[in-house]
Length: 107
Image: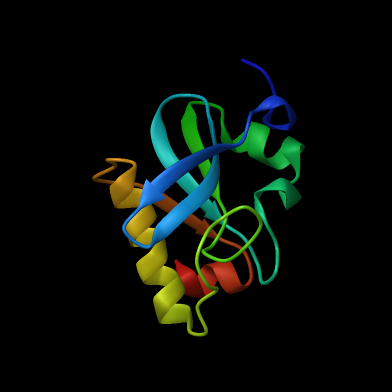
């Protein structure tokens, strides 16, 4: 397994637009949700690599951030709904969430 710094950014199409994501490792999925105005490249690779021990880590950008499409939501509830749309588009029925700052409210 490589490191998070080596993972290639992908795009997933969801009902609410396209989202950029990075998907690392295998196991029970975990989605870390970042803080305000951050993107998936802002995660510390050392932290993500530690979380990836026995887990599938799926980081993604909120709608309207970085290479995603559409507009940035103005409400946390809309951001949470976007996260659900994205997770559903990946075909994941269950996923653990880890929120950091604003990401805690989204979770």
